[in-house]
Image (cartoon, rainbow, N blue to C red):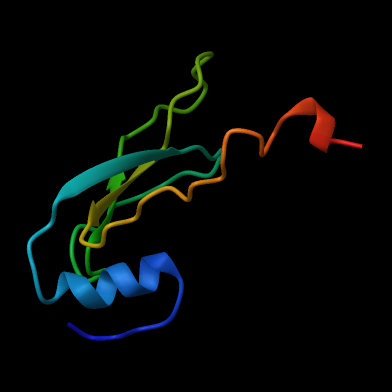
Length: 90
């Protein structure tokens, strides 16, 4: 395995060239800009999917979906039970 130090997204991209994805996440992105096209390849483990949001709709819909294939284990840090207790806030 390559030892890389950098942001999670960068390390995930480098490691994606070596192995199998364990899980994928999709993140909705909102904008009032008109989006044309989408990017499905050339960005490593990431894709931008166009949802073809219609202009002048009254409801809010995501214009793009960022799909991310995760290749690294990214466990949440153990912040402990008392990390956000009221007595620690002054």
